[in-house]
Image (cartoon, rainbow, N blue to C red):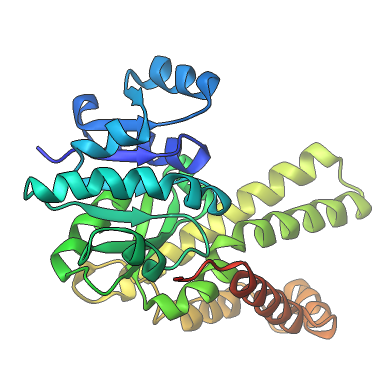
Length: 290
């Protein structure tokens, strides 16, 4: 049975751990490396999982998921590489997965044993509740089989798609930062509801349920439009969203009046500028090969 080592027990590491357990992975096939003793104790008690050192976690793992903060990658990569060399001598292939934002596959490939398969993943915050989306990008030595295996891991915490690594800064700007854009829109709509005379609790309930229901409508439309029943993560979303918007917009009605003001206020341009700014910042924060 393949063993999965999660290096880092922070929010992303814990979300993946919880998702894998929900998906039926056995505790004995999971191990976590966490330096913070309080965090380690919490994870061990809550999930009954082995929490140990980086070296011990990597030693017998088939998949090594680096889930530490980008600034901490350089602190753990030495232990990972040293242990990976020993595993290589035992002819046990290891697949390395990084969810650390901005750290390129080339960086890992230069630190790890020659030819090590590396897959870079950009998940997002909703993975904490099993509703995330993760974009996978293969390194030079990652095969289609490796991608399929890693994809199956992240299926446990939401949707999965594959992109070129050069697109991951844009992915970060859209789906990585996207939940914050969404929450800001919720805040603004709740505040507007209060200004219109609703109590804050009523406005909040209305907005949250409206957002959830609208997302469900769009997902259903995408499923219907996808070929062979596969979930459509991309090509039809723009037209489907536009069609649904038209469906709920009566000519000359209240929704049309509200949309006109959003367009007049430059909503589309503001969103485009936000994504571009986040993309540039992601590029600036990147850790590349040495």
